Image (tube, rainbow, N blue to C red; front, side, top):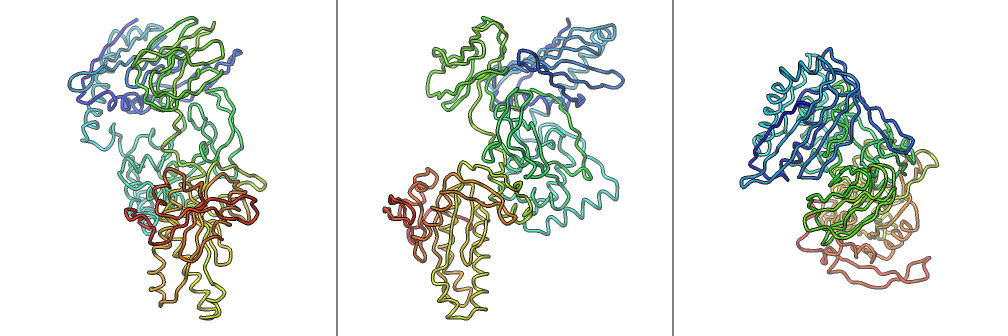
Length: 602
């Protein structure tokens, strides 16, 4: 066994450096390691083993990938056991410790040769080449942490021939000519040509918006428009609730199955539009082909929700330093077995595994988590945050965006399919006195005014991250993923109605609005996504309680923490609603009761 130890000093704490070095897939790509395909083999006891193959020049490699162990911001350990190639085993361990000026990373690589070639490499150039390459990458990390570079690692820009470059220029110009481009098409094109493949396998608009310091709605609309323009391709990923990886992908919404199996976690799970069906993007192959495969299957930053993942032998106990902020966590094992959810507000309960059973135990010492394997098999213990993938653009969210419905009106569910939505906010509007309006100004003028009013509502709904589901006569049904956006949109409509009337010759319209939120069923009706259920019926009837110029919000919606500050000035009452035996609490808001500090941008 031969070893290499490297020590790197940083002027930033481990919380800053950890996400950069623990992103082992990105690091491996930057280091020039080959992309590889992973083969998963389920074992008789229900565990899963992972095997990979690749080539480095003329040397063929095959190995078993041992799941990485780590404690966030503290250490990680990676091991490969080779069946082909110059080495038998390669193990890498990175440990982080605080220093007065930041942190220190101690990196140790242990390599066992398998044959003469392996012994020659270890006796000559392998460790020297590794140190030179890694030291260069560490300088990239230091520059990025200091804000001196836009990306962590430098990547060579993809060179296009004249014809492909001209075609890309036309695509960029077409996207930027559309309002959905937001003037960002050239930046996206440069990103596709310059970014690492790790960034391009799954482009998430919200993450990209954060990196660019842009509004996430603008970047989402840019990506949607880029699919139509030929710069990107889209896909629907069905994410595993454990590892959060995309275990199944479909080219269209109607091809997403209602369940899937994650071979890595060896579990089956159901489709949930609100959580685990994600729309992601890749470069169009004509612009930049991206090969399938992995640079590192189990890197800590591929599962950032996992706080720690530590393997224990039978009967082993370990206490590891770990910082768990107050919140919801899940205790489980990497192998098939049970799980339990814990709420942490003070002392952290120990994690105890007995066979396939997982349970919280006695409190751990402050700043630590105690892990115990009381079973007879080796187990990998996992503590993960219950917070979902923050950057995921879920099917529920994207199908409530007006731009998506405009550009992909054919993106519907399979006929007969229906999807439960845990919560959706609906806004119903109606014109007051529309019959009298037609009589007063004539059919043609009234029809034109109603159409203009639809456009006015559409602009506000879109600006508040919603979508018009349908119009019924002179009424509108709009959907929002965020209930606060629905209420802000309703208030913005009433605030802007006076200006709308002035722009249209002073001919007054008055709009009645109702807003409600709750669970619903999404289905395809008349070739579009629509929503049904008792919540939808109640939302429509709440609108019927409103008078012209008023917004009526259900009591349930008004109690939402994000909505409550918007309705404090409203008048609460119990109202009788047709079809319900008991009265319903509602909050009535008129224009002068709009929160003064609110600025919708609508």
